Length: 241
Image (cartoon, rainbow, N blue to C red; front, side):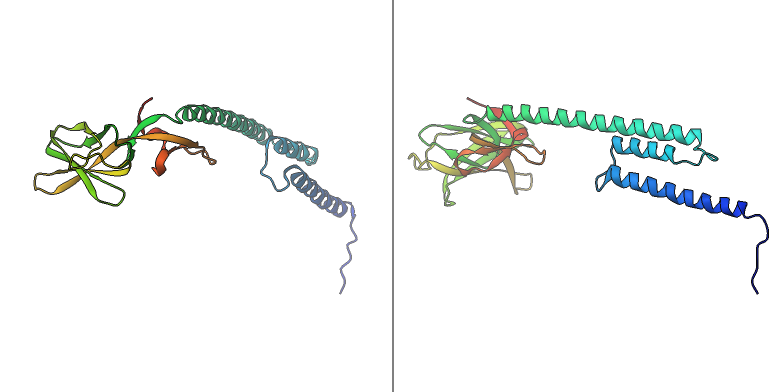
């Protein structure tokens, strides 16, 4: 059995038109969103374009609430402020990197002191290093070995108080002969109360050969002469001539 609506069709038609308008509005906003943002994240220009499109296509019989509109304006202002802050931070970071690069480049060819256990030694003259003593001890010794692992000299520093203690190697081996110039390893040790050997950190001189700038915003590296590796700029303890 068919049911026939004999009432006025105006209300039904109005409801249909309302649904069509809503669909059209949604399509307009969707198209604006796609046009404004594409595959990129939304910026302040895209946000403003979407806000204007939303206002143009709102239902005149049920306009947007004032509170919601003010909230969206506040979001727009906040977004613009964040973008400006991000630009400022990027500029500061760029200026800092340039300043750091200039500072590091001035170190090329200069002698520095940094924490390491290897040094390229010119044995024709004396070399000064230091040992980081963590607590007062009865004796500190520094064992010097060549690139082949052969011990050429052991320096006895005696009792040391806590702090940095300097030592000097005159470039001679245990027989009093001048050792060959080259790369040497310095191993500092002491003994604790139970007689066990405890390793101590050493700081040795090196010459800066070049500078490597970080491509990811990290700290730049100073490349040391003689294949002594690289150290961070913040790891330098002393800068010489």
